[in-house]
Length: 139
Image (cartoon, rainbow, N blue to C red):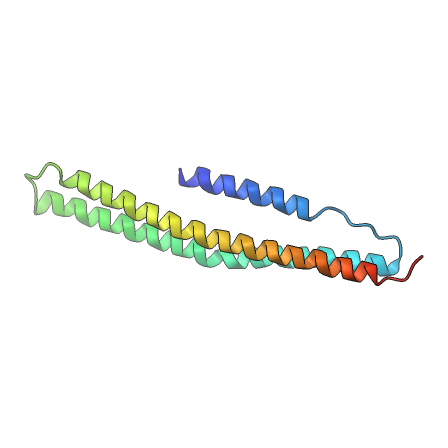
């Protein structure tokens, strides 16, 4: 489920990225400079997203590792401390599932923040391009 959700978000992101990187018209040197700056701006925005995602990716890994560790300790306690309680392992797995859902929720929120930041950066690229292009002298 986690990978399907990440794949869907990735596909949505790629579709947005492709739509935001449409070629721009460049008929003279000024317009070509505007176009080049626009393309560089989009690359910087994408790099910013990649940098932004380093923290959520690391936090997700750490969070799921902690959930796994708790599960192993819980199951160990089931076999050593509560060997006659048959519901003990079920409780461990339920807690583990809730922990992982919380990890995924925190990741999704952070990922959405990174996507929003990139979308804002892409919009700024468009605004700067438009201003640059509109200030170019006519042919």
